[in-house]
Length: 456
Ligand code: HEM
Image (tube, rainbow, N blue to C red; front, top):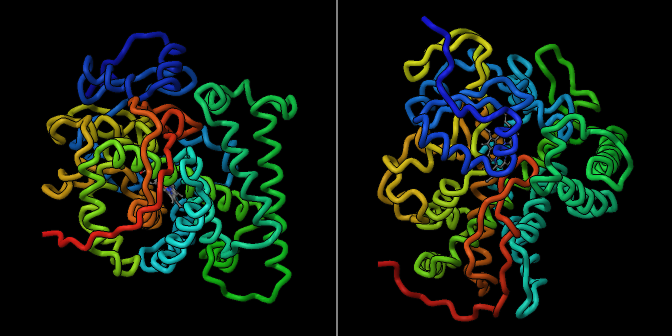
């Protein structure tokens, strides 16, 4: 067989890099129009990337044995954010072991214990808003999701260390919060510490402070009698691998940083898109409120099972995936995917954006229509906002619960409107893609009257 990579744009590699950083959604769409479901991008600084934008190709990749691909080494771009020992950078046996150690606290049944806490945090944050106040959805959602992940990871919500770490994480993320600022992740020569007046220096400063606080927390826990808490740090500290070894401090800190970053920014971004779409579509808002009003006496976990609320969240994740692609898969052996033959060391890119916007799968794909998820069940290869296979998002159960409960808590009680009627475009912010401007909202008045209408 001939190892010829599929066709793709012939733009110079530096131009493809700019298009990718600037607006990967539009670039992928443009390429798919010209080259079809499988094409090759040649972006400066990375090996050729074979983009796959068809559910068949997604299935052929994600249903293979995990040992057929390396994934961690393709994520090198996030190394400066999460450190060398992060789960997202591991492969093979090490990845399998670390994931096994980190997974239990994120299982659906363990996450459920956070339901009440998530509602409380959402209410506390919303209670601070003043009548007529303009709030930026992404900023306030980040406040909520950061608080939740800190509680899940450390089991604390008080104390000096906690109050120091919260703003530092926000400041650190702000340093990569625009296409220009995030360039240093893609361009290694910008990763020089010339002091805190340039983004990389400020970013490094915040990161060092956070690592110090994490080390203090670890030292304090080590000095206390071994008490089995159910927070993730306690579980990580007591976990042992097959050889009976525990994680060293460097490993603990990198995994903590990974969970803190992966665990709050993406959920906050999805919540911001959710507010945008719900408030832009009054019929969706009305239907959602009807469902929530009817179920107002249910326990949080029951609320999280409501069908329309579920459909709304699924549609938000379809229309606005957190990135245009999931983690790249690097083939370790030759293989055939969608009739194309690939040698070992080929970088395969599954585009969640292209698949989620395929008109053969989703009628009027650019429209926000939660009903489509009530009418049809999509396969994990047609709909995969959390990726799949052995790298599927570790926090899927937490993110799902959080999105539903934060939306339900706020939408059912408060009146919010979009501050602008203009449509909002996605923009690269660090490694994820989120709404330009963060979605400004106006907090109008407290919703006092709950209807008791039946859903029938
Ligand atoms: C709505 C919010 C979220 C979205 C859309 C999301 C999406 C994703 C995606 C697409 C991947 C890559 C999967 C793949 O390539 O197959 C991923 C990986 C990951 N996510 Fe999330 N995520 C979210 C929230 C969270 C939360 C709350 C956590 C909690 C800690 C988390 C932790 C992780 C970790 C650790 C990985 C790496 C898994 C591995 O390499 O084995 N994510 N996520």
